[in-house]
Length: 569
Ligand code: ATP
Ligand code: MG
Ligand code: MG
Image (cartoon, rainbow, N blue to C red):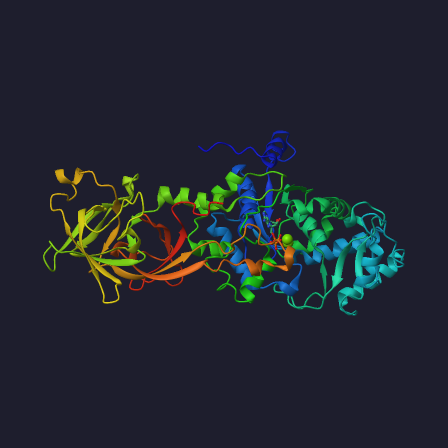
């Protein structure tokens, strides 16, 4: 069994179970459905779902759909697909909007307790009154309205009597608090926007901190894991949970019973961890949305995108992303992970599991003149050098081959081990060939090589053991399948594309060589792939049959990652 993971959050969970504070644990993953998930979310998903699984607990998927303007059912569906693709499943699927009625009743309770008031300040005025880090804020002139007046106004807000932004419901906490989040934060705002789940039912929407903390309480979340930027929000999170106190106010949960949702109100604990940051990437939904909207990439699942959909189409495996999260670890220390760590995780996974195939990316014809015209045979190749269980495949071989243009040099550089005029090279699994003749057109362009196959060097023969410096890959030119090969590289050419000094933005750092499309040839067993099958193309890299465009009669392969790190700095 794999070693137990030992980060500080798992230690807390272990202690809470050992001490009997919780008999079972419950977590949630709370994405906002306003974009596709990105690789940063993979960390949160692996943590939320992973911890639940490791400790025999449950993890909910909860859509934090409290900001209707930017939300869309398209994202709701894609997020579910992505979570499942990563290898996880939820105990229950919820929407924060399932709880709007409870949130509303909770707000009326706060008003009755004198913990919340309706404020008529404009958004600009609220900002002005809030003060700064060094100066306390000022009380709103509406702060001391009576409970009756507040209730009346809040009910009229809910009834849709007031225009957007004319009123807010604010928590009455402390305008002099050193924590800006406690300076009478808004709990509700008026926003007459249709909601992807509740339609036009609500002209007011709860703010994130209020909805999130109560959502956790309603679902009986024991450990509410989130990223470090919410650390300053934790006092407000606790304030909302304590003041509304759903655990001791079951009548507030009545609207859920009507919907058949269980009543599990408990006191959740928020714990923060550091975000996943990787250099050479952008990871904010805003920027990813812009990349798509501005046509800088071909969509959310462009294989260069750092969305989970993009990484998937690029050829990343769920296991490689889970491995990344394990290698990076969980802590409160902010750091930036080198891109090579991400690529290394994919290489390690694919090296162990991806079948080998041969493909020629930049083809050069080689004719073996000592084989008869029409000669055709099939050779049996192992699918994996270290894993016999992956079996073997048939590879056609004939008189005419495609080899890699880059494996031939008329004037070889020092240390060259591959083919030269008059020189010999081993063809992977087929025998030793010599280059006898270099055929060129009138302009001196290379057309093809003509050579001979050493008949005593076929696999299994004594002569095959002869020492030859280089081995190259090849495909049978008569039976190989022409393929579109998309050579992808990092989308950004600088380590920190988010750096906006010198008046630049991430748009200015797009790597012009991030995609090169070439026509190559693949052996038939590669063409036969179903979409999303991944291979190592020997000596070339790891490739995936494109999820959308690949067909066995018109193969399309994406380079997921090169065999070795070529981005030495
Ligand atoms: P972004 O800031 O990129 O737009 P977000 O935080 O607004 O993302 P949410 O949908 O709210 O996106 O995020 C859902 C969960 O994923 C949150 O708990 C959030 O903390 C977590 N998360 C988002 N980005 C990262 C990251 N880079 N590393 C780890 N967790 C993340
Ligand atoms: Mg968010
Ligand atoms: Mg965010």
